[in-house]
Structures are given as structure tokens and as C-alpha cells.
Length: 204
Length: 155
Image 1 (cartoon, each protein chain N blue to C red):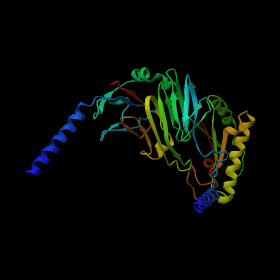
Image 2 (cartoon, chains in turn yellow, brown):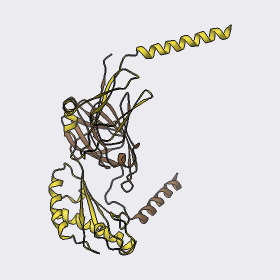
Image 3 (cartoon, rainbow over the protein chains, first blue to last red):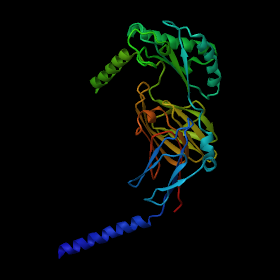
Image 4 (cartoon, rainbow over the protein chains, first blue to last red):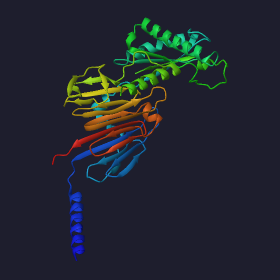
């Protein structure tokens, strides 16, 4: 008998809880829209709410959470997104840009093409507010690891010096040398590979 | 505690010696920079109000706050871009990034307002490493571009 009363009491409590959840008014109105990537590829977002999951994986796929416990799916478009998110979108910083410059063998002298390419970096830097420039030097696998570490750093230093000559503030430039560890083209040791003799310059 | 610190320092020295990749002039706590700032914008950092201009450094734990006329954009060290519109509150909860392996973790909370996002190297390297929380949802970012809004509903 006692057990019966307890059961009834629990049932009432449970019913009360369920009731509370059902009638809870919305406290937030949230919306997320997946946009097409600038490279033409659209990524994906996993939206989790109240133990439920929805994956957005096509351009302008939208999830809205207003009524607690429910993720509502819909489809937006470029115009609607531009209207609803104009200030946030127009405050988007310029995209980081990466340049690759190539060097002559065992030296910190650019190839003729890269000497020309270097000139294109300056306007890109000017296009970035408070620009940060990261210069990472690399080598091919001719020479020892220790030698190539030093050579890759020398290449990065060379680029920094040239950028400073062009008028870029020195303290905006970070440099590093990674030696022969990160080849673009994998080779056996002691193989000449001009495509690996490079610096990668990221402007962000 | 002391000896533990020593071990950590010694380990760091060994790692740098082995890889030879010590970037010059990198500060420890910088996770990004303000690149765009319009109208009323400030950062709340350790209960202090930090004024924001283009070039202001963003740190883990910062909360970016915009007024009714404000908007702001941050570029992070992994090339992620986050920008907010007016009346927005964005907390940078966690940002860890290894510039060599691109491994890391990036967690933010949009407490209110609007945000546009472009994910960077952290999300590209590990699809579950970038998360955006809002009061009602968690967004797992598998890349790359999206917008999100959270508004409070008047009772």
C-alpha cells in the first residue's frame, strides 16, 4: 500500500515536470545559416540543442531554435543573409593570403620569377589592416638537417629584410625556418628539388 | 611545483632545439588581433574594460562587446575570422593552436547578437576542435563559413 502511494506521488511529480517542460516559454530565438565557402566548397555545421543534433551541410541550410526542445530546419538565401547579418558580414577582416617564393639552390637568392612575385606582396599587405606577416623558410633535402635548418631560416630572414626595405614594419613580421621537414614534393635524401626550396609568406 | 616548472622549461628548450622552429617575437597569450572596429566596441579582460582599436591584441578569456552602433572583426592565429554586429557579446573561451601541426582547440560563446565566421586551420586539421556556443545551442564547426544570431525573447 505504501509503495502504491509512493508510486503515485512519483508519477504526479514526473507529470508535473513534463508539463513544465512543455509550456516553458522561449527565452531565446537563435538562428544559424551555413554559407557557401569562398573557395566554392561548402563545409558543415553540427547543431546540438536539448540532446538533439542536426547537421547543416548545404549552402544556406538554416537551423532555428526558438521553441525549447526543437531545432527547426529551413532554407535561406544570399539576400536574406545579407539583410539579417549586414553589419557582422561587413566587419569581416580581409582573408589571409599566402604567397610562395622560390630560391636558387643552396642560396637565399630568389628565382627570377619570385623576384617579380615579391613585388606583388606589398599591395596585399597594404590591403590588410594591422597586417601580421608570417614568413616560413624551407629547403630541399640536399645537405644535412642542421645545415638546412640554418639555410631555411636564412631564406626567411632574407624575405623579412626585403619586406622591411619595401617599407613594412619589422615588428609585424614573424619568421621561422623548418629546414627540409615539410617538403611540397617528397623526395629521397640528397635529391635536388627546386619546388621545395621556398618560403611561404602568410599575410593576415 | 618549482621542479615541475623546471621540467616544463627544460622540455620546451629541448623541443625548440630539436625542431629549430622557434618563431621570433611571438607573445604567449595573443590569440588574434582586432582588424575591424566601428562604433562602440570594447573588450572585457579580467574585469577591466579595454578600449578597442584596429590592431588591439585579443587574448584567451577576452569578451568582445559591441554597442548599438558597433561592429568588430578579429583575425585569429589559425586564420579563423570572427566578426560581430551591433549589441553583441562574444567570449573567447579557449584558443590553443600549434602552428606546426595545426592541432588545437577553439571555443567561443556568442552570448547575444550576430556573428559571421570563417573557420581556419584548427577546424581544418580536426573537425571537432572548433565550437561555438550560444545560450541554446552548441555548434560543431566542420568548416567553413556561417552566420549565427542569438536574441533574447522578452518574457
